[in-house]
Amino acid sequence: MEDQGILSKVQDLTDVELALLLCLVANQHCIIETTEEALDKLEDEILLIVSNVFGLSVAVAQCSKNTTLEDFSSSILLSDQTIAEDEKESRLPNVIIARHLGLAVHQVQIQVLELLRTGRIFTHTAVHSIPKPFLLVVLDLTSGTPLVKHLNDHIFLSHYHDPEDGFANTEEGSEWIEDDRASLSSVVHKSVAREYNKDPLFHIEDIELLGHRSRSSKVSVEVKRYLHDILTFLRRHRAVASGITPLATKHFELLARSLAPLHDLDFVTPSLAQLAARKVYRHRIVIVAPEDERSMQYGSDLAAVGELLEGITPAMVIEEVLESIEVPL
Image (cartoon, rainbow, N blue to C red; front, side, top):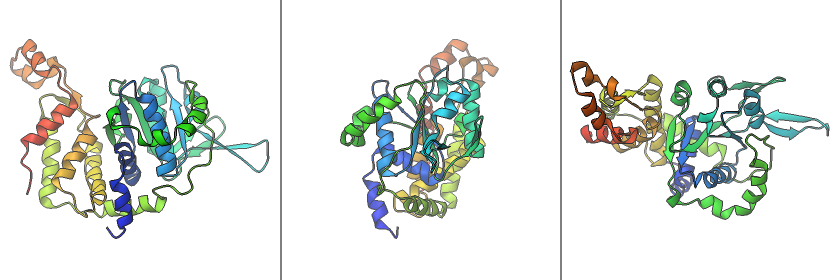
């Protein structure tokens, strides 16, 4: 890379910071999961990352089964004071953290999908457009309720943060968090615009440069075939019911390309393809029910198939596929 300063900053990022950076570079969205005990800390960590590392505005939507369309819309709008003292102007933030979004009713999740697809959200009084850059972070437990099918497919990558890896930004910004936590205590709250770090670690120009380099990353014929083999083997795996969609295939190559400049490369390697597969397909793959497993069509025993599929997870399927495919040299 021409700018070694950007590369040196990338090398010092934590796993959560890197996941958010990849989404900003690719102009996509993510799911970040952790344990129940660490969820509050992870939310605080992401708030600080958005502010201090990227210098972007942020709003948090605490979702539940009782969240209405109006609740969600009002929770993600920031309020800016206008010239007239008694008037306030609302806008969408750069980053929305949607906590437990899977619990929200179908209509709310469809509204989020439309926001991602069209870049706009409608309220009773106005139409609000997303700023650039824009990022949706779905924050949930590893055992959380899945998103509706089409919204889930629009999520670029998923990442699990192990609490043992720590919360570097939270430890440094505890005072800021204590002041802000009071305003985040309700189920759905109205976010208020605040002053963010005017000298963040990554500026918009840095993200745009990484995005340009990712789009310029080359994919050789051998690696292209390797990418195709991975998605083909995933689709044909006996434990997979669905999830290997055309959009997932597009995201798979996009993430592989986006990883290249972060490793000071202008081409995609097989190891980057493997990493991309782990992040893109983990939240998409649906494990087949024993009665629907394809060998049942040929007389397999239901109990035996059920025993075979017991405990299989999407992550296990991905690892099995990666181990079974010959890696190009």
